[in-house]
Image (cartoon, rainbow, N blue to C red):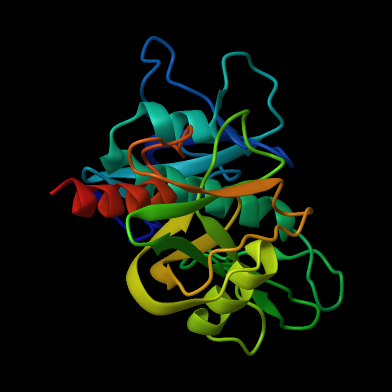
Length: 261
């Protein structure tokens, strides 16, 4: 179990080693234990970021330039490990991205200093303080009766379809974002929005707000940019779906269970 207290008073503990990457952050598996990202208990050095407690053991994060072999992509870790690990890996990946991307002050450009008592980078030149970025997104399963509206991003593996998603824009509510994103991506109008639950999504720093919505129109018109294809699917004939650890897959499974009863 993860405890979010930052172990600032600890000088040793477990370590997660994260590789710098613009596309797919990777985590080093423990030697001899390929199915855990936690390195053995060891002294911490100044380059490590105290992260949290995991099963009452202090954990620190170390970000390196990937000189070693055997790295496992962050998404692969999520797929292979039990769901209880999701919060730890999500925290490590998001904090690692923040550390790498905010080494300099966003206001004046001076070097920023990492603070010990909280996740914060402080600029001593102008006083600006930066915290890990969290970007709110909506993710929505649009249905019409039993049918599911699923779409393909150009970045997806061949044959995979998923629910519709997008970032919430400044000044916009989550509900407004659902209507806008669905119409922009597939040209469908919706109503009966129902919030389901949220999920931290560490690729790189999203907070996914999950919704169900019912279509009031069925004609699809894809945008051709974010969406390569979209279609209505029957629960009895589905395409390749998102991985089980994703909120997208959970939205789909909840809908399928409803119609299988």
